[in-house]
Length: 313
Image 1 (tube, helix red, strand yellow):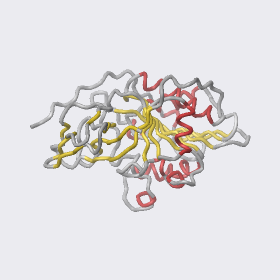
Image 2 (image 1 turned 45 degrees about the vertical axis):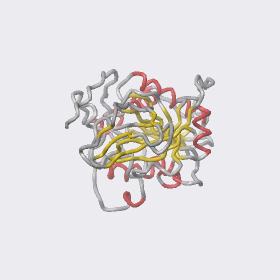
Image 3 (image 1 turned 180 degrees about the horizontal axis):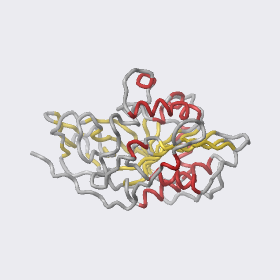
Image 4 (image 1 turned 90 degrees about the vertical axis):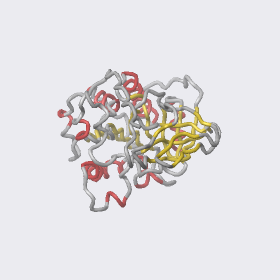
């Protein structure tokens, strides 16, 4: 039985021409670096890891357009996947997430040092020294469904401390054992382990095309930079009590028959033993009480992520 295709969202924020930002200043397209001349951390703000997650584009172009420069340390601003971004089609706004590979799953030394080729692998190899040079990384993302913003980060105190200090978003998805479906940018090289030079976090700002997501991206970016002293920005006390979730399983779509047993957008909960989805003959069962789903697939694609199963902490 075929599923009814999900309806398209309102497109409140649309892509803009980024060609004016192509020529950076370190020899890598769409990467701009600004040094204060004073001691301090090197902070990377990265946008457009996925081509249709345009809130990060808004945040980074705002910094460039306003001529923001670091008070201390070094600021690097990057647009990661402009090739996918430029493929945007308003009639198919979810189609340009990637060209071949998921750019946020290819950051292992094995893939980057291998012989396989794709637009994403070429771009990741070009950006490799940019990521490696940063002490602290903010990778700006958004979600296909209209859910509350949230952090995603490996379960190191250095990451939790920064996310809590910034104060928003209030929801934290903590990865004790990595993502489970590849190596994300924030776990490349030294950032993967206990000896990382600093914090590396993903912020999921809300639904891709909502103005609210762009607003969250801009505010979190300024707070991130302020936390490390690169800009001046008042950080208000958190408006909501933090909620933390631990990633238990990342499930991939195995067959074209993948189905959730009921409509899900994200943050729905299931009791231990409750059926969450079926994937052909395989039943996906909740491993615990209060199992909370994050980022359920909008349209199942074999080989892509189906859903992230978590538990509240």
